[in-house]
Length: 153
Length: 411
Image (tube, rainbow over all chains, first blue to last red; front, side):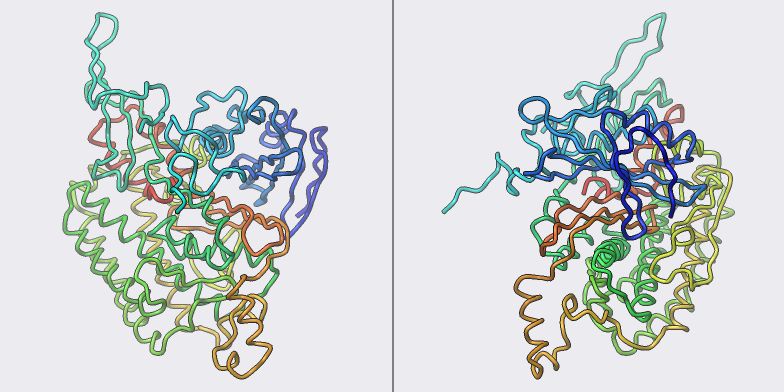
């Protein structure tokens, strides 16, 4: 798999197990995604997720999996983001304007990791109840949760 | 517990009406689900109606969320296989397979041909299982009750085969990291052979019941249109796309587990409605039967587990007689095996579309992060677009044709 991508947003390119990962400047993610969709035929967004790299800094990695049907290739974009406001809510631009599929995936990342997506049409919790506190997939979130933790014997 | 959904307030009564004004006709907001029988699980859809026409639909998901991704991080690598079954309980072996393949990618171990072929055969059986449940319940929704009994009759045979192989009917966990859970049982060729020889004639029966059935054709043809561009943009995958004329199947485009050695066709239909999705799935059943027949006839001999003593539990006899095997056994059972640090994305063609597992390891014996890109989650995003503008009675046929599993959506 070879990629001759040249874009100012790409900080680093990694190859492993036949998969290409681009480390991307989070400030220019939308511009890069539009470029990949329009001129590199990545018309499918397979999914968006995040990884909590606690205690590294920047703390979170937002992962985008793209797929091109014409080229039969997949591409992974990785943005490293960290908290800008208390309680550690990082922000990144939403790519819903590029692929509508991003809508629910970004909501899921928001729900599970507390990463906020700027310009998202409806950034609310999607899997957890709307009044839930905390972000369950963060590494500092206990497995039993806060509210319903069992009393210790 | 309150839930959020697009463009609606969080607490609305089950039915809410706004009176007609000269400018706008009377509108009604209707809650469909979460206990509606034809949503196949716990899905709630908030429908905005004008008469019987759907103006907008907003799916509300999360009722079956069980935190499986969080739980992955608590189990060791091999234990976590049991969680993958519970994601999509109709395509459990596809989920087993994609997880095993992703972790094997990180471990860089090679799976012997016999294990690969058995994996293909079992995954195709679970595809049949899933399509049979879909066909039976979908026909039941539309009013054809007999189909349900016919499909579940064959499904029972498949579940018996699963039980024979793994000891379990549904939560098989049969595909493990490094190979299979157990050696294929003695006499499996007869059982699978008997089933697969009879199966094509059963599919003939289904088609005889449905293809010329005027109720079935009228309720499926021309219903549930959604353009291919919209589907690709919204993340819809699988038979939905093939029913819209796109020839894309991950088994062909990115072959895994030696699918490239099997001869099968990718059925494609162009009418892009409930009928074409039905045609695609029925033909897929025939193709799966072909794959199973080929696996049955050409099953390679040899090992059913990888030659990787640090990952695969040693043979019971060896464990009792050889020191080294005993040490490996002790290490694997007590602390699990370690997976080199790295990340991998693996996708397979599941009955509902693309399942992709993104696995991150930090070099320890537990997964650092596992993300499941499940087909039902992706497909459901296309639902509002598909339901807009159609009659409420057609919505049952349309949403049934998506074939989602809510466990798969909510994880």
